[in-house]
Length: 343
Image (tube, rainbow, N blue to C red; front, side, top):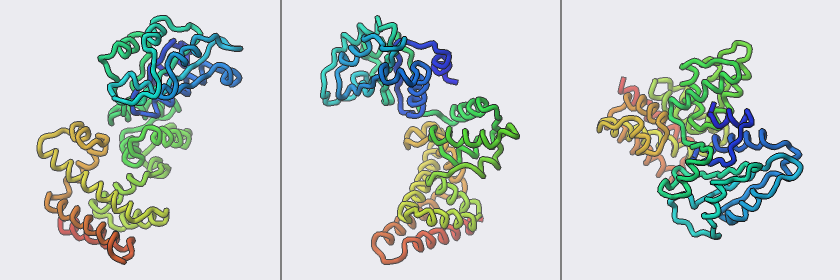
């Protein structure tokens, strides 16, 4: 469990919290834990306040923080979008008295929990205010988790539900559900409930119960073709059509997957590691790991040819009168032919 969460659940509150980063789930979960543990439902109406610092001055929010709670022992004040903590150049709609804010951080109201919500990847570490907050506040950096961290998170979450999860099941869940922490948590909670009798989540359970995102279905479709499971690939495609997914969107995602395979293969040959490739392509490292596995089934020439065929199919969809569903079928048959020649 994240240390800050444990302290909050034990009602060991800090006077000031700084929650920053791009992993929305971690920030939202921390917000909910603070509200649930610091206030009762009755107190919410009187002792909870939320300010958007792009619309309201920080001194107005501080006046709220310094006002005594009503019919309760504490109050909670959330401050959204403190852009003055970043290096971003923004056209401020309001002026902030940051000197007064610094004074408050040094001597906060003992009856108020003040929470800064900064959905930014980085803060400006050169700023005096940022340094002060890092020193005085309880800080949560809500960063995107890598594969190892995701697996650790899922194992810990499973244990909190009193079930175990082996490596094979973890890998399969990430392959099917992707790396979105909110979706993964939802799927794991569902699996944990299902596995209560056996106390263990298996790969078979994951396969049976996990909801697939469209992107993961496309990955599975390509993977079935690559491994020679043509009937399964077409079954996935027809299931997507039954779900009213647009053929042009399906084709676009297939093209995106093959571009990722090609780029991963090319960058790997140049000596880049998976983490470096993920950073360069701005995708999660786990997606790069899966693409690297698929890349081993293709030569460079085959990948260039496939990407050209995808571009031709896209042009056909936009300019010919042929049924869009049939254009993808034709591409899949061509892809099947390429893979058959590989064997």
